[in-house]
Length: 615
Ligand code: G6P
Image (cartoon, rainbow, N blue to C red; front, side):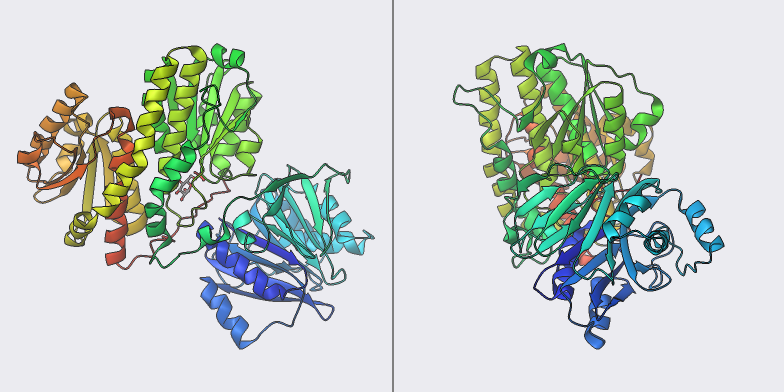
């Protein structure tokens, strides 16, 4: 959601900014724009639609050379995605340009006040008010753009990352953040600000985190950060270990295909370096003592979208291995139901981006109730891990396609590691039992690689179903969240109606949806879990008896399913709890292929954003 880039340095700002926006496209957007400072003026170009539309007007009418610029990809909230509402926005005099991510909740009052004082606002956005407020504060005597920014930020309510330039200060870009993402990239004779590091890793891998309510000013050679009162704050620097080429398509038709193929690596990297020399499992950042972890009497996992389904898998593993009750809740619902939380509750927030506003607000609520918070996150330097007591990073590398694939598997692995860690600390599993499970986890990358190598029949199946109007997915135990994820991928990518159900629930309602030829995917548990396995085999028969086309995912050697499977997808044998790491993969491939055949934009599905930074 909304990508932001700011640049000061010796290169052509337009090129650096537009390239940065391209690398943030994955966040999801519906218009784009840039502003440069040149010839004592702010020069703006912006267009509704994809970056190609902006490229076209820049090619027809290039902006003048400039060493300083800002850019924005907008995911519309206030006002339709039109040229007029696209960012940057300017003030009455055309001196200031502003880009913004977030929602300024008091914008209506601010706008009314500005109009009363004679300003003319031309867009429907909340953002434009900021340009005019800066204009006023500078006119009233603020000596620098930075000083004006501090004054204006104190008048704003809600969530914002703001990046601004002033034609009268052509050497600096000023930015501020509250509840929305912003990082600084520190280069040689050039500096950057951006929504995330992907925008600048081809230029520098040295970055600085910005805390809540901070203002940063970058020039070509300096970075200075203060709070909104103007007091300097300590810089929190970090090194980005992502390889710049990891965010390139590398010959694949879609980023998603590349990311599906990267899953063996994502799983093995997430497992890497987890053991101390004495054989103890260790996590990335643990600011909770073993004593505190032993006091925990309840775990609540909160997350959104795909990460929520990873959380559902976590529940099975955590309860089984630790005997601690574990709830899973949508982050967007969590704080509104007044959850029962105290110091002995461990809240686990799962978020690929580390910026999802619903999840962030949920962890803040949990911390206010004195609960401990552990983040499972893929993005170093993002807000959710920064505001948590402990972090497990999913070392999946950058994920560009909007719909999650490799990060889902890495999140599940991180959840297992958490479950095993708690079991180790609390003594509910012996060291050798923990080590045995980790050994099984280490075999998973090879199992996924096999599924990837044998995926052609899954793609063929997808091609045979291009006309399907509805596809159902069912599973039991950890196969249930896999069914939900399979359905979500298909909805997101192909815009086909798809639903996931618990196999046992089918007879309580959804079975009415089954009609002649309706494709139904069934995720069959390993035979090791005999009771559940047999129940699912019965469910397949019920479905088939009603005319469905059964597409069965079952482990090697499971012959019980053969008579009832119209299509059979074989899964490598793995322990029951770990099966989502393999059973998800064919469902991703299926959704990706079907969407491609339908001519969909697989990497950037309509209406979706990768990082949802509004509630
Ligand atoms: C958005 C994305 C989903 C993602 C969800 C949670 O809705 O489109 O793919 O699963 O946000 O994102 P997070 O970054 O918190 O994992």
